[in-house]
Length: 266
Image 1 (cartoon, rainbow, N blue to C red):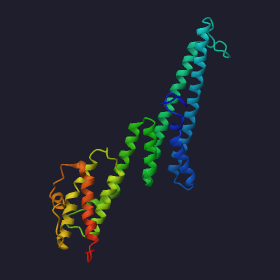
Image 2 (image 1 turned 135 degrees about the horizontal axis):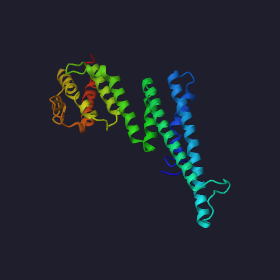
Image 3 (image 1 turned 120 degrees about the horizontal axis):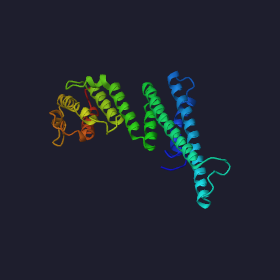
């Protein structure tokens, strides 16, 4: 934390959500009204925050100068250039300025969350990840985590129908789609999201069973080091931490089958 802009955050951190809002508006003048409105709100609030932060900075500097003057000449109570202003008045103004900056920062964070909601609805997930990163860098970890959870829920929703079709009797085309969907979930959902790995892990046994059936159909000898049968029988169900490795192993087995001459592609 630096005092470049306010007692709360540095200038370059404070304006990062506004930079994104400017880019969104400049990049597409035909954007839906809701998204444009959220961007405009964020830009306005950021401007007001910077004004309040600047006022706090100026008052803090004036207060420090007045304190030094008072220390040098205790009988002098007024701030130079501000006749009749007492130390108590200066302190009250400074506290008000700090409070204004703090409340406006809270509104900037809230406006960023509202903008992220509009972006999620549009499917602009990379911009939401950027906003989450901005908030995290400013120390707003809970707000950043909220955005990442929202992204996780949206990702589950996008792939829900494809996940429902996962079974141990899937044809090759469906197996490939299932692998891609599960990989997308692991890529798009933050690892810290509760139950992410265990939820993905429960789809691995039917996926492995479908791959095992395909291997038998193509009369492929399952190598001794293969874990296809182990995964198909639920052997990794209790180990969600290795879900990515297990999925990669199944994908490698399936891709090897697809590359075999005379493969069955139906």
